[in-house]
Length: 421
Image 1 (spheres, rainbow, N blue to C red):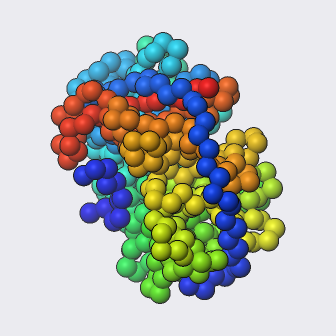
Image 2 (image 1 turned 90 degrees about the horizontal axis):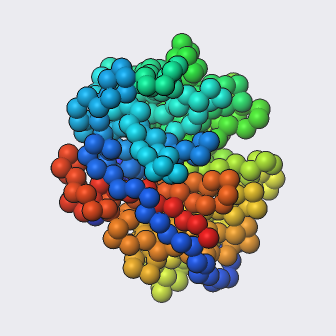
Image 3 (image 1 turned 30 degrees about the vertical axis):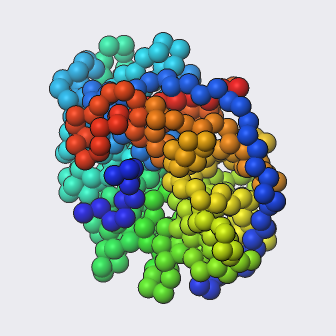
């Protein structure tokens, strides 16, 4: 049973100081054109979840949690799979193709963002499947010639003691190795709480990187700084005294420390901030940006919402750039060259069923687009292309009823959407 999967679509004392700077209630509406680019179906995959799309040479790559097609050695369809797939989408065509449909022994239910190396190979994780049905890390290599299939290599199958059920993708570090986290398993005697890990792109080297004591439930990517420090978040901990979440650092020598302990009880300037979720990003000088799904102002009229925050690398303070009252999200953030952060909500916008928003460096929140029933539940985040357009996925929506995703009510298999000025 997956622990705290948090995929409900329809269906303390800090080690450093924490400074909360709340912006004024600036909230703008900016007009972007919202386009539905693709509707998923059983054969092209269904229910893309928390991973951001990967934009690479005018193509988009991503994963669906369910649905999908098996392919033969020539890249032709060879039956349906309900275990998810890796897909390629070419907007200019438009064209979608299955690069690999998972069958179980090679992994099942991919989740989290993909990354690519300089040769165009893709790396990611599956949440279950593999040799022990506890998830995998995989490499997907492009074919040597046109008309052949992409090749999947299972780099690692988790066993439990080294982690289990990765809910995020992997990051390529400055040394060329892969880094990631698992949601469950790990080297502790109870094997509850997950682990961090590093893995060579050949799969010949795998090392567990223990998390700080009590920091559990990582569901977000990690970033690796130029000196090899691994920085990430866990949604809960430090257990057993608090369940607010940790931002951690693992040094190259394996020493794990808590950089910031989030707090659920109203404390930081009268605001509750806890349970960091989604992708985090690092800027050129080492500041970390992210999102916490539990944010509550200490006022009777405010509804719990989400916080978009920055951890200042110089002062070590946690600075909240914005609190989006009453909204929910699991997307995390991406950042452009001007310091603007972008993310999604699953209940924002004019219809209350999803939105794409930005937060400026000064904390101004702008609703870029409101989603509708056609593009429902944008659990994943968005990605920027070189022209400034935004691309994302909705986990539900579209006109195609999913037959393979039996646990989800029939409201569509999900979509790919874009936002352009």
